[in-house]
Length: 304
Image (tube, rainbow, N blue to C red; front, side, top):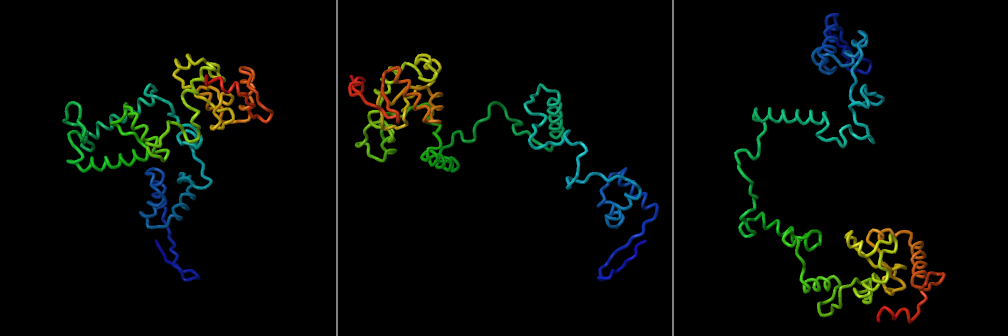
C-alpha cells in the first residue's frame, strides 16, 4: 500500500507500507542475489532509505560501499596497493609461478578472442621479413617523407638531433672551422683556432701535453696516464683557482674525468689542497690569500 502526505511546508512526502512478503523479498535480493540498494528500490518503487531500514530491522549487515570517509577495507594490505609500498610483482620475472600463470592465462584469452574473431593478427598471411612503408619512396614522390625531412632539418639546426645519415662519420676540417667560426660570431677569415671564449689562446694542445707529461697521473686517484688509457678514461687539465684565463703551469693540473667532476664543489678546500700538493712536488709558491707567486725562470721553463 502507498499513501501520499503533505507536510507543513507544502512539500510532497511519500509514505510506504510494506507487507511481510515484500520485506522477505528485499532481504533475499540483497543477500542471495546481491543486488544493490538502488536496484531494489527501483524494483519495488520505494526510496532507498526504506530499503536500508528494512535491512537494519532484519539485522543484515550492509556491504562496504566504495571508499567513503571512515571506511575500512576488509582486505587492506592484501590486494590493495598503498602509496609508498612496492607492488607484489616488482622485479619478478617469468620464472616466478604467479607471473607464469598470469602470462599463460592472458595467452589463452588472446587465443580465445582470436578464434571468436574479436581480435586480428596484423601479420596474418604475410611471409618473410616485412618491408618498411617508405622503401622505394623519395621526398619528391611522397608528401609524408617531405614533411618528415622538414622536421628533421629544424631539429638538426637547433642542435637537438644528429641526422642518421651522418652517424659514424666525421666532419672535414673546413666544415669544423666553419661551424667554430659561426659559434664565435666571426667570419672564417677572422677565425684563429679551436678554443672556448672563456679560455685564452695559451691554453692549447701543446700546453695540455706539457701539464700531462709533468704530472704523469691523475693527482687525486694517482692512476697513471697509461692505465687511464687502458680504462678508456679521459684526462683533463684543471685550473686550480677556477680562473680559465690564468693558464700557467702553477695554476693547472691533470685530472681524470671522474675526479674532475668531484672538484667543482667545495672549491676553497680543493684550491688549498692542490696548491700545497704542487708546492711539495714542484716547489711552486703561493701566498696565504691563495695567490700565485710567480718566478720568471719557472714560467719560461715549459716553453723551452
